[in-house]
Length: 156
Image (cartoon, rainbow, N blue to C red; front, side):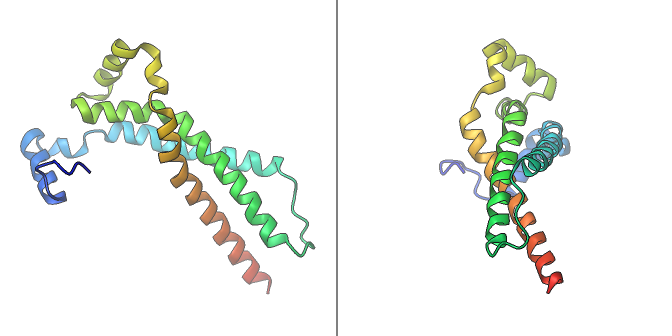
């Protein structure tokens, strides 16, 4: 991502990490990654279901039912993606700090808190909402659309 980096490809990156930090260096940041991924998707699914129940139900006899279902899916998927991104933003900040400083999870949290106080919990929130919510919302939306398509084919 950095055009000025002397590391040209993935193979060189892996070799550099291994040479600098040993085999365990290849898993640096995994703890924060796991801690953020599971809550992000659990939150997204809960919000998707909640918003889905709150939206007006689509009339199955409506000539626009397929379009209406996709619109509902887009609304609930977007809400789910944003909720997942907001909830797990602090863990993204921690993980990025771990990569930047080469600190472990606990030490990265201590360093962030010492530097920023509790404000570290919202650092980079606006960028993170875009970077995280789009993939989460897309995953949910396209899965939902695929299920709707599959169900409509079974009804034929």
